[in-house]
Length: 497
Image (cartoon, rainbow, N blue to C red; front, side, top):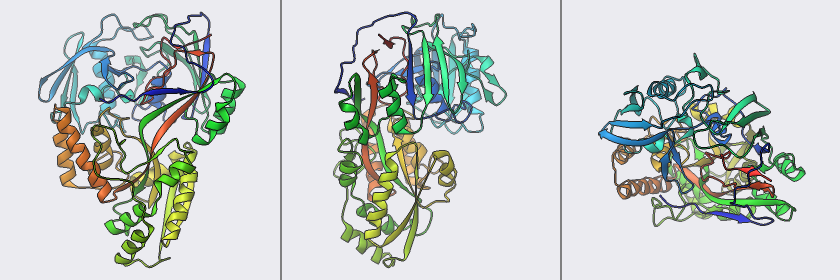
């Protein structure tokens, strides 16, 4: 797995020495908030993981390599059967021991949820059962070599049996992590305290708080005023404002994430490849990267970064307005005849500006675009149901599984749970299924590259820019590392001085 290198820019040095001071607390500002009352298929699971409460059977380190978590070992005992051996001596924060029955109960709750998680759904998993006190047996519907990576996703968090009350989930006091959630106000904050009995060793901090602040400018204000020690997801336009701020450092990392323009492939005239290719050719990704992202992103041809081992070769960002006009003419669409709506959401502040540029660029080839910006929860139902034309999306392509299998399955298979493009191809489904059974990474990567090229060639989705993630961190914070997939933030070694 390739390494996503961390870079620290300006204003301070983030120490890697452990400075343990009892009674210290830390506050960080997150752009996400608790939205689904801790349903594991949602982003709430990532919030719980970043807060240092939620843990999974397998972990991913900063190089996206698998490491033991609540499980210390795993093996594929049959083509469709895996066994996971649990760590000894682990207790949930309510004192209940970690057992095979507890793990099976948590994972079966996920499988039977109204909205199962993308990396661990009934479409992929046939059964989960305890096989003794410390072994869990998972049977998949087809051979699935990537199951350990799927069990590193925060969606597959293991909570105490007491956390599951019917369809509801209560994480307070029911995790295994270094910190225990003590209070939650879903639209405002959550508080956590140190888990003195943490199996991985006593955390350095006494506790802290996560404040939920969707507005990027407010997050910046919080870290500048000292109200927050860390502010997640600083937009590119704010970098210059913070670079010279005394006592604040910016942690910048190239991440496996793309800003993409989703096109509804089942809705006329976007079901015409020529119309989609015309839209692709009309968008200047380099100009968007230079202006909206101030050079901190790069124009994209594919969702994948060019140096990913699965990146397609021989493709480059397209910008050719004359070709775009010719394609529309060939499709029988006259200038001014086509009118489309473009959706963007507020939690990614840059998307509003990207939408305005795309609106202007498509206007130049004769497509009138109406832009609508709203909270993500307000527009997602339209995207899932197919009642939309185009939408901007910031999508992490390793977020569900640290391998493109998860992204391609969710977004481009016929039954994909996140298939916002409403694209369906039996050939593509067969290739994705084949990849899931291949233990040799290079063989899988060749399939991923082939599928990425198909997505590009047919303009199924238009990749706009490959993103860079930026956090603001005060000089008092020690041992902070940005995880490439932002699975973890509050670790036992994080502290302040």
